[in-house]
Length: 113
Image (cartoon, helix red, strand yellow):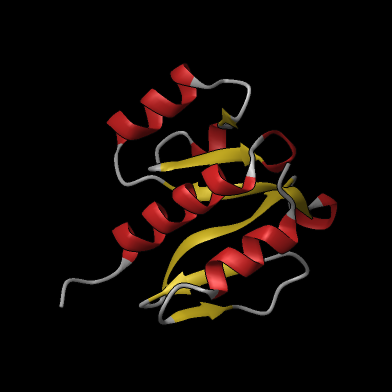
């Protein structure tokens, strides 16, 4: 199963990826986030969970397909409901699938040439 170091290895292998300093992980391309650590809680009680990744999925249809099709891997919270983002349980995904998900997110966030 995958972990934060797998996220880092995969993300940094993609062209033009920038890692934003964080207590967890936070990756962007063209100044647009595509995968980062889940910030659980608010204010003083906020902590970055490196066992859960926030992943850009592009649109609501893809989000719903992932949430309904693989609820053991993907979930959401109220704060993320209006956005094309899912939360991914890293300890339940294998590295090849993680690579596919991160690469797709990266590709969708790149600006057209």
